[in-house]
Amino acid sequence: MDSTVTTGTEESVWGGGNKPLNASYGKLMMWFFLVSDALTFSGFLASYGFSRFKFIESWPIADEVFTHVPFFHGNFPMYYVAFMTFILIMSSVTMVLAVDAGHKMKKNAVIWYMFLTIIGGAIFVGSQAWEWATFIKGDYGAVETRGGRILQFVKADENSRAALADFAVTLPEERIVHKRKNGVWFDSEGYKTSFSLNEVMEGFKSNPNILIRTEVLDENGEKTLLNREQSLKKLKEAVAVVEGANLVHNEYGNRLFADFFFFITGFHGFHVFSGVLINLIIFFNVILGTYEKRGHYEMVEKVGLYWHFVDLVWVFVFTFFYLV
Image (cartoon, helix red, strand yellow):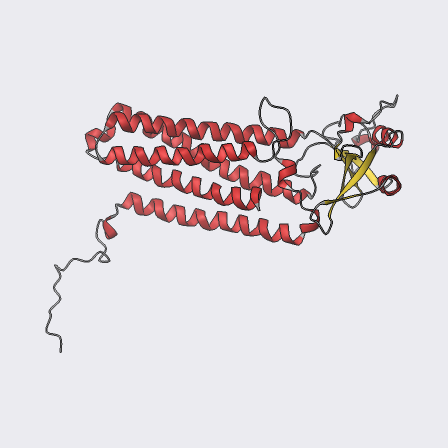
Protein backbone atom coordinates (compact mmCIF):
# COMPACT_ATOMS: atom_id res chain seq x y z
CA MET A 1 0.00 0.00 0.00
CA ASP A 2 1.35 3.41 -0.98
CA SER A 3 2.01 5.42 2.17
CA THR A 4 2.48 8.70 0.29
CA VAL A 5 0.16 11.34 1.64
CA THR A 6 -1.19 13.95 -0.76
CA THR A 7 -1.41 17.36 0.82
CA GLY A 8 -3.38 20.40 -0.20
CA THR A 9 -0.18 22.26 -0.90
CA GLU A 10 1.01 19.88 -3.63
CA GLU A 11 1.32 21.77 -6.92
CA SER A 12 0.20 20.45 -10.31
CA VAL A 13 0.03 22.06 -13.73
CA TRP A 14 -3.49 20.63 -14.02
CA GLY A 15 -4.55 21.94 -10.64
CA GLY A 16 -6.23 25.11 -11.92
CA GLY A 17 -5.55 28.32 -10.09
CA ASN A 18 -4.74 31.66 -11.63
CA LYS A 19 -2.31 30.29 -14.22
CA PRO A 20 -3.03 26.68 -15.23
CA LEU A 21 -0.29 25.35 -17.53
CA ASN A 22 1.54 28.58 -16.67
CA ALA A 23 -0.72 30.51 -19.05
CA SER A 24 -2.54 33.67 -18.06
CA TYR A 25 -6.28 34.09 -18.35
CA GLY A 26 -5.85 36.29 -21.43
CA LYS A 27 -3.76 33.69 -23.25
CA LEU A 28 -6.23 30.91 -22.45
CA MET A 29 -9.14 32.96 -23.77
CA MET A 30 -7.20 33.72 -26.95
CA TRP A 31 -6.53 30.01 -27.45
CA PHE A 32 -10.23 29.20 -26.91
CA PHE A 33 -11.15 31.80 -29.53
CA LEU A 34 -8.58 30.49 -32.02
CA VAL A 35 -9.75 26.90 -31.62
CA SER A 36 -13.38 27.89 -32.28
CA ASP A 37 -12.32 30.01 -35.24
CA ALA A 38 -10.25 27.14 -36.62
CA LEU A 39 -13.36 24.93 -36.55
CA THR A 40 -15.29 27.63 -38.43
CA PHE A 41 -12.68 27.88 -41.20
CA SER A 42 -12.47 24.07 -41.34
CA GLY A 43 -16.21 23.93 -42.02
CA PHE A 44 -15.91 26.50 -44.80
CA LEU A 45 -13.03 24.67 -46.50
CA ALA A 46 -14.79 21.31 -46.13
CA SER A 47 -17.88 22.79 -47.80
CA TYR A 48 -15.72 24.17 -50.58
CA GLY A 49 -14.07 20.78 -51.12
CA PHE A 50 -17.42 18.98 -51.22
CA SER A 51 -18.87 21.43 -53.74
CA ARG A 52 -15.77 21.38 -55.89
CA PHE A 53 -15.67 17.61 -56.25
CA LYS A 54 -19.42 17.43 -56.79
CA PHE A 55 -19.11 19.83 -59.74
CA ILE A 56 -15.55 18.92 -60.72
CA GLU A 57 -16.32 18.93 -64.45
CA SER A 58 -17.46 22.56 -64.48
CA TRP A 59 -15.16 23.98 -61.80
CA PRO A 60 -12.95 26.87 -63.02
CA ILE A 61 -9.20 26.32 -63.28
CA ALA A 62 -7.46 28.68 -60.85
CA ASP A 63 -4.48 29.19 -63.18
CA GLU A 64 -6.86 30.66 -65.76
CA VAL A 65 -8.67 32.90 -63.29
CA PHE A 66 -5.96 34.51 -61.17
CA THR A 67 -3.58 35.66 -63.89
CA HIS A 68 -3.31 39.37 -63.18
CA VAL A 69 -0.47 41.44 -61.75
CA PRO A 70 -0.93 45.18 -61.02
CA PHE A 71 0.59 47.51 -63.63
CA PHE A 72 1.53 44.56 -65.87
CA HIS A 73 -0.42 43.19 -68.81
CA GLY A 74 -0.13 39.54 -69.68
CA ASN A 75 -0.78 36.07 -68.37
CA PHE A 76 0.92 35.53 -65.00
CA PRO A 77 -0.93 32.64 -63.36
CA MET A 78 -0.80 32.72 -59.55
CA TYR A 79 2.18 35.10 -59.44
CA TYR A 80 0.45 37.83 -57.48
CA VAL A 81 -1.32 35.40 -55.14
CA ALA A 82 2.07 33.88 -54.37
CA PHE A 83 3.42 37.37 -53.66
CA MET A 84 0.53 38.05 -51.27
CA THR A 85 1.23 34.78 -49.47
CA PHE A 86 4.93 35.61 -49.14
CA ILE A 87 4.13 39.03 -47.66
CA LEU A 88 1.74 37.55 -45.09
CA ILE A 89 4.22 34.85 -44.04
CA MET A 90 6.99 37.43 -43.66
CA SER A 91 4.69 39.52 -41.47
CA SER A 92 4.36 36.47 -39.25
CA VAL A 93 8.17 36.35 -39.01
CA THR A 94 8.34 40.00 -37.95
CA MET A 95 5.65 39.29 -35.36
CA VAL A 96 7.78 36.49 -33.90
CA LEU A 97 10.69 38.91 -33.66
CA ALA A 98 8.45 41.50 -31.96
CA VAL A 99 7.34 38.95 -29.34
CA ASP A 100 10.94 37.87 -28.76
CA ALA A 101 12.03 41.51 -28.35
CA GLY A 102 9.18 41.99 -25.87
CA HIS A 103 10.44 39.09 -23.76
CA LYS A 104 13.82 40.84 -23.64
CA MET A 105 12.14 44.20 -22.82
CA LYS A 106 13.59 45.85 -25.93
CA LYS A 107 11.03 48.56 -26.59
CA ASN A 108 12.57 50.03 -29.77
CA ALA A 109 12.91 46.60 -31.37
CA VAL A 110 9.25 45.80 -30.59
CA ILE A 111 8.20 49.10 -32.21
CA TRP A 112 10.21 48.37 -35.35
CA TYR A 113 9.00 44.80 -35.82
CA MET A 114 5.38 45.70 -35.02
CA PHE A 115 5.58 48.43 -37.65
CA LEU A 116 6.82 45.94 -40.27
CA THR A 117 4.04 43.52 -39.32
CA ILE A 118 1.40 46.22 -39.78
CA ILE A 119 2.83 47.22 -43.17
CA GLY A 120 2.78 43.58 -44.31
CA GLY A 121 -0.83 43.15 -43.21
CA ALA A 122 -1.88 46.37 -44.92
CA ILE A 123 -0.22 45.29 -48.18
CA PHE A 124 -2.04 41.95 -48.01
CA VAL A 125 -5.46 43.54 -47.38
CA GLY A 126 -4.90 46.05 -50.17
CA SER A 127 -3.81 43.28 -52.53
CA GLN A 128 -6.88 41.24 -51.68
CA ALA A 129 -9.13 44.22 -52.38
CA TRP A 130 -7.43 44.67 -55.76
CA GLU A 131 -7.87 40.97 -56.50
CA TRP A 132 -11.56 41.21 -55.67
CA ALA A 133 -12.00 44.20 -57.98
CA THR A 134 -10.22 42.40 -60.82
CA PHE A 135 -12.25 39.23 -60.28
CA ILE A 136 -15.52 41.17 -60.26
CA LYS A 137 -14.65 43.17 -63.37
CA GLY A 138 -13.37 40.28 -65.50
CA ASP A 139 -11.42 40.77 -68.70
CA TYR A 140 -12.81 38.42 -71.36
CA GLY A 141 -16.54 38.00 -70.93
CA ALA A 142 -18.69 35.00 -71.82
CA VAL A 143 -22.29 34.01 -72.43
CA GLU A 144 -24.56 31.99 -70.19
CA THR A 145 -27.07 29.34 -71.27
CA ARG A 146 -30.54 28.87 -69.85
CA GLY A 147 -29.23 26.07 -67.66
CA GLY A 148 -26.58 28.33 -66.13
CA ARG A 149 -23.67 26.93 -68.15
CA ILE A 150 -20.88 29.29 -69.20
CA LEU A 151 -19.63 29.43 -72.79
CA GLN A 152 -16.24 31.08 -73.30
CA PHE A 153 -14.68 32.19 -76.58
CA VAL A 154 -11.32 31.15 -78.02
CA LYS A 155 -9.23 32.33 -80.98
CA ALA A 156 -8.73 29.25 -83.13
CA ASP A 157 -5.44 30.32 -84.70
CA GLU A 158 -3.80 31.22 -81.36
CA ASN A 159 -5.64 28.79 -79.08
CA SER A 160 -6.07 31.60 -76.56
CA ARG A 161 -9.04 33.26 -74.88
CA ALA A 162 -10.91 35.81 -76.95
CA ALA A 163 -12.50 38.82 -75.31
CA LEU A 164 -15.95 39.94 -76.40
CA ALA A 165 -14.43 43.16 -77.72
CA ASP A 166 -12.29 41.13 -80.13
CA PHE A 167 -15.24 40.03 -82.27
CA ALA A 168 -18.54 41.53 -81.07
CA VAL A 169 -20.14 44.12 -83.34
CA THR A 170 -22.08 47.26 -82.54
CA LEU A 171 -25.70 47.18 -83.64
CA PRO A 172 -28.14 50.13 -83.76
CA GLU A 173 -30.44 48.59 -81.19
CA GLU A 174 -31.97 49.83 -78.00
CA ARG A 175 -30.96 47.95 -74.88
CA ILE A 176 -34.07 46.51 -73.24
CA VAL A 177 -34.15 46.69 -69.47
CA HIS A 178 -36.50 45.12 -66.98
CA LYS A 179 -38.89 47.64 -65.47
CA ARG A 180 -41.65 47.44 -62.91
CA LYS A 181 -44.22 48.59 -65.46
CA ASN A 182 -43.57 45.42 -67.49
CA GLY A 183 -45.24 43.27 -64.87
CA VAL A 184 -45.79 42.58 -61.20
CA TRP A 185 -42.75 40.31 -61.05
CA PHE A 186 -39.66 41.85 -62.52
CA ASP A 187 -35.87 41.79 -62.22
CA SER A 188 -33.81 44.96 -62.20
CA GLU A 189 -31.01 44.76 -64.76
CA GLY A 190 -28.39 45.69 -62.18
CA TYR A 191 -25.67 46.55 -64.67
CA LYS A 192 -25.24 46.77 -68.41
CA THR A 193 -22.70 44.58 -70.13
CA SER A 194 -20.44 46.08 -72.77
CA PHE A 195 -22.27 44.22 -75.53
CA SER A 196 -25.76 42.81 -75.92
CA LEU A 197 -26.35 39.15 -76.69
CA ASN A 198 -27.33 39.99 -80.28
CA GLU A 199 -24.09 41.92 -80.79
CA VAL A 200 -22.05 39.00 -79.51
CA MET A 201 -23.93 36.47 -81.64
CA GLU A 202 -23.68 38.54 -84.83
CA GLY A 203 -19.99 39.16 -84.27
CA PHE A 204 -19.39 35.47 -83.65
CA LYS A 205 -21.18 34.44 -86.84
CA SER A 206 -19.14 36.88 -88.95
CA ASN A 207 -15.78 35.79 -87.48
CA PRO A 208 -14.87 32.16 -88.37
CA ASN A 209 -11.71 32.31 -86.27
CA ILE A 210 -13.70 32.33 -83.02
CA LEU A 211 -14.71 29.06 -81.36
CA ILE A 212 -16.61 28.21 -78.19
CA ARG A 213 -15.11 26.50 -75.16
CA THR A 214 -17.50 24.95 -72.67
CA GLU A 215 -16.87 24.77 -68.93
CA VAL A 216 -16.97 20.96 -68.97
CA LEU A 217 -13.55 19.34 -68.58
CA ASP A 218 -12.41 16.62 -70.98
CA GLU A 219 -10.38 13.49 -70.20
CA ASN A 220 -7.18 15.60 -70.14
CA GLY A 221 -8.55 17.94 -67.48
CA GLU A 222 -8.95 20.79 -69.96
CA LYS A 223 -12.12 22.60 -70.98
CA THR A 224 -13.85 21.16 -74.05
CA LEU A 225 -13.21 23.12 -77.24
CA LEU A 226 -15.94 22.85 -79.89
CA ASN A 227 -15.42 23.03 -83.61
CA ARG A 228 -17.03 25.76 -85.69
CA GLU A 229 -20.22 23.84 -86.46
CA GLN A 230 -20.66 22.74 -82.86
CA SER A 231 -19.95 26.27 -81.67
CA LEU A 232 -22.65 27.80 -83.87
CA LYS A 233 -25.15 25.25 -82.62
CA LYS A 234 -24.16 25.72 -78.98
CA LEU A 235 -24.39 29.51 -79.19
CA LYS A 236 -28.13 29.23 -79.85
CA GLU A 237 -28.56 28.12 -76.22
CA ALA A 238 -27.15 31.42 -74.89
CA VAL A 239 -29.57 33.71 -73.08
CA ALA A 240 -27.32 36.37 -71.51
CA VAL A 241 -23.91 38.01 -71.68
CA VAL A 242 -21.74 37.71 -68.56
CA GLU A 243 -18.76 39.91 -67.67
CA GLY A 244 -16.76 39.26 -64.52
CA ALA A 245 -18.15 37.50 -61.49
CA ASN A 246 -20.62 38.14 -58.70
CA LEU A 247 -22.90 36.06 -56.48
CA VAL A 248 -25.28 35.36 -59.38
CA HIS A 249 -23.14 35.10 -62.52
CA ASN A 250 -19.56 33.99 -63.10
CA GLU A 251 -17.79 34.25 -66.46
CA TYR A 252 -15.08 31.83 -65.26
CA GLY A 253 -17.39 28.84 -64.79
CA ASN A 254 -19.53 27.40 -62.01
CA ARG A 255 -21.14 30.20 -60.00
CA LEU A 256 -20.41 28.38 -56.73
CA PHE A 257 -16.74 29.09 -57.31
CA ALA A 258 -17.39 32.83 -57.08
CA ASP A 259 -19.63 32.36 -54.03
CA PHE A 260 -16.92 30.49 -52.14
CA PHE A 261 -14.23 32.89 -53.33
CA PHE A 262 -16.04 35.93 -51.96
CA PHE A 263 -17.08 34.22 -48.74
CA ILE A 264 -13.87 32.43 -47.75
CA THR A 265 -11.34 35.05 -48.87
CA GLY A 266 -13.62 37.81 -47.59
CA PHE A 267 -13.96 36.19 -44.18
CA HIS A 268 -10.20 35.72 -43.98
CA GLY A 269 -9.60 39.25 -45.23
CA PHE A 270 -11.85 40.54 -42.44
CA HIS A 271 -9.64 38.68 -39.95
CA VAL A 272 -6.49 40.23 -41.42
CA PHE A 273 -8.04 43.70 -41.44
CA SER A 274 -9.10 43.27 -37.80
CA GLY A 275 -5.58 42.05 -36.97
CA VAL A 276 -4.06 45.16 -38.55
CA LEU A 277 -6.31 47.41 -36.45
CA ILE A 278 -5.47 45.50 -33.26
CA ASN A 279 -1.76 45.62 -34.10
CA LEU A 280 -2.04 49.37 -34.59
CA ILE A 281 -3.53 49.78 -31.12
CA ILE A 282 -0.81 47.63 -29.56
CA PHE A 283 1.82 49.48 -31.62
CA PHE A 284 0.81 52.86 -30.19
CA ASN A 285 0.61 51.39 -26.68
CA VAL A 286 4.20 50.21 -27.09
CA ILE A 287 5.27 53.69 -28.21
CA LEU A 288 3.52 55.22 -25.18
CA GLY A 289 5.37 52.83 -22.89
CA THR A 290 2.24 51.11 -21.57
CA TYR A 291 3.84 47.68 -21.42
CA GLU A 292 7.12 49.00 -20.05
CA LYS A 293 5.15 50.25 -17.06
CA ARG A 294 3.47 46.87 -16.66
CA GLY A 295 6.83 45.15 -16.74
CA HIS A 296 5.91 42.72 -19.52
CA TYR A 297 4.81 42.58 -23.17
CA GLU A 298 2.25 39.79 -22.85
CA MET A 299 -0.29 41.75 -24.90
CA VAL A 300 2.09 41.66 -27.86
CA GLU A 301 2.35 37.90 -27.44
CA LYS A 302 -1.43 37.50 -27.35
CA VAL A 303 -2.00 39.51 -30.51
CA GLY A 304 0.89 37.54 -32.01
CA LEU A 305 -1.04 34.31 -31.45
CA TYR A 306 -3.96 35.76 -33.41
CA TRP A 307 -1.69 36.95 -36.22
CA HIS A 308 0.01 33.55 -36.57
CA PHE A 309 -3.40 31.90 -36.72
CA VAL A 310 -4.50 34.23 -39.53
CA ASP A 311 -1.32 33.39 -41.46
CA LEU A 312 -1.80 29.66 -40.93
CA VAL A 313 -5.40 29.80 -42.16
CA TRP A 314 -4.26 31.57 -45.33
CA VAL A 315 -1.77 28.78 -46.01
CA PHE A 316 -4.69 26.34 -46.07
CA VAL A 317 -6.86 28.67 -48.16
CA PHE A 318 -4.00 29.24 -50.60
CA THR A 319 -3.35 25.50 -50.87
CA PHE A 320 -6.90 24.22 -51.30
CA PHE A 321 -8.46 27.17 -53.13
CA TYR A 322 -5.66 28.28 -55.45
CA LEU A 323 -3.19 25.40 -55.84
CA VAL A 324 -5.05 22.10 -55.70
